[in-house]
Length: 295
Image (tube, rainbow, N blue to C red):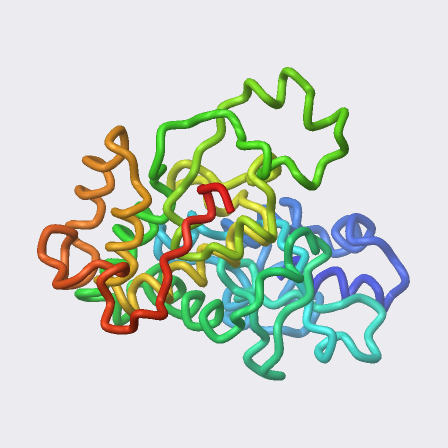
């Protein structure tokens, strides 16, 4: 709703605040979008010749709490094709979901101002599939039997005890920065996501990663972190046995017990029941890649 009201204000060459003062609704547009008040919606409907039902459909009223917890209230992603010929790019309600990366109308990726690490994170198919899985899970649609929450918890879980960075993990920094005592002594988490999506380590160096420790904080994560998680969910649920084996191989004793608990409900094969490890694959050319080990 806030995006639509901004574009209405543009038509009359006024700001959103000036439009609000003229029409007379009480709450700010973003608050109205989250928790619409009937009196305000009726006020806007009368002024714009719209129906109350249409305006309520523009808000997040009535959506499941799980979905609402993953909303980014000030999402800035846009679709270049949707924006052609428009003074202000529209922002659709669906794009506020933390794992929305695609414009379904034009079948192309959304554009984000946050370009950090994006060039190294490809795999659009997996990101789109993972985003769709997470969307259905958030909405409570067709997620029965799909262990989405355990998969997210597993990807966010550390596989090793927090430790200072290895020299190669600081290679992009200048030499003076690499030798900063505060950076060399800082302990960093190594989440399982970096095993399932090893390109995330290339996209975002360890000292710049802002991956939250739990699901509740995912909506505030930067674009690259959310995009990598969508890829991770798709890959993990597509081949849980192989991915769990890779995570188990990379985990240390400090984290292995917790990793096993998180793995127990992901897929039909738990760690102790897998048939073969990645290094025992029938394909002798296949080589396990651990992004945290020395090259």
